[in-house]
Length: 270
Image (cartoon, rainbow, N blue to C red; front, side):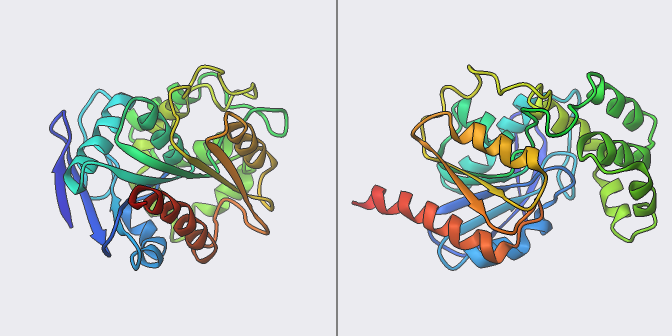
């Protein structure tokens, strides 16, 4: 484990594996750098793979008040430490963070996302208008278990009785440990889970190649959102993974990412 300091002084924990062109992996809700270990291992024979704990998680620090710009600065600091430019893969809301960072000028040369959790149609209910505010209240009260439960019902869309049963599972404690950062993902998503089309002007400045992945066996709104994002321009490409849902098999994801990122390095060397 190594550490780098962001612009506001927050210490960010990261690890590197392999050698070659740099690929940074950005996690979604609940994820810490260890969750990427299987994927990172599969990519490390071709790339220098960087995994990190987003602020407030794992071994990384945090500073109040939260602002999405701070997480963009975090990614900038990390990229600056590991080479000055990187290709990036973002999972779920981590993909939206990476997309936002790219639109704000971060040194990203190619970007891949898997299932940014947009809600752009009526295939599922939109998030409540006070979603982030309610999460903030629960976190401020220290009710981390209730915050996780609210996320799982309101954002993921699981039935309350299913979530109640999950509270007894061994993995629940791990989710509670990162629950205080759930509002951060809410701020990153903004109004993109409202059931309306994506804002026409958001991410307009993204001109690098973008690969948008989605499974065809998961929630319908995930594939719908991926399709809408991928229709934004000729620099976007949609890749559908047959039989996969939000918990994609890394052995299926890694070859697609390798092909996409290798294409970028081959163009740079030609």
